[in-house]
Length: 331
Image 1 (cartoon, one colour):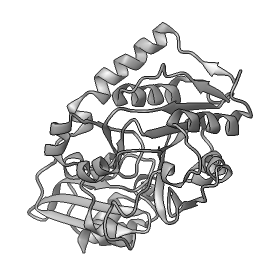
Image 2 (cartoon, helix red, strand yellow):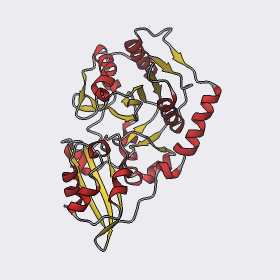
Image 3 (cartoon, helix red, strand yellow):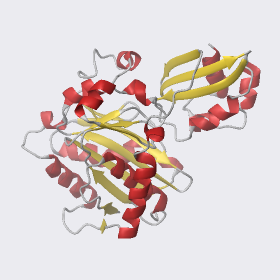
Image 4 (cartoon, one colour):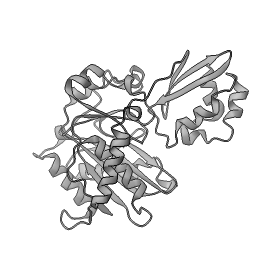
């Protein structure tokens, strides 16, 4: 394994571009890579989410907070200089898909060694005393993948609360009263004074067995040029980060054990004119492939199921059958 040197960049658009460039261009068949990064104030939107409904737009503008969509699923997270982000980049393996235990183990191990009783909980969270200190998600293609996560070290939790619009059903599904009561910083549980950079060194030692002379990848100038081009064309692009919400006359929302699905459907004369599927589910596929199959079809159970017959719905949405997914859209 090699550590990717991100040159201490704190621009979320560049760090996410670096991560995507790496998973698509590095030789992950023969080498694993690790990327650490810290972003200045930013909201990172899950791939399948409706940005404008996830953020407090006035607060974001007032505080000059970056809003950037990532290529992995899951929910929206807030980043600041008290938040350490990690990404393990590897070759694609079916055994690694949704195997968050495998990739979070170094973090949990390090925290336990520091006297913090952390554990992987639920779908993709690391918790301490039932409070979330890390959320995780994945991206994959046919050859490579990454599993990445955030670690709340000494983040400004008041900003987390103010910047994000957390849906009531998500709060209720966790059995909590508010988002503030659900999250915590690692620093609250440490018995010793430690900076976020000290914690990063502890993680490096856990992963590499040393804090010195571990293998590092320094990108060439030509490679950095490609990263900047990706940041400019995608991660600084309004269409990618926000996108346009389609007109709709039917909305279906439900929270399943794999996450929330929020479907917006425009129907005229009994035919689906447009459909957009949002959610915080962790599926690796693109929802557009599901949407395109349904557009132009009658808003009718048998025709909709038939339209989806060649799709692996679990890859695109989550652990739900085609039949149950269509029933949800029709309910």
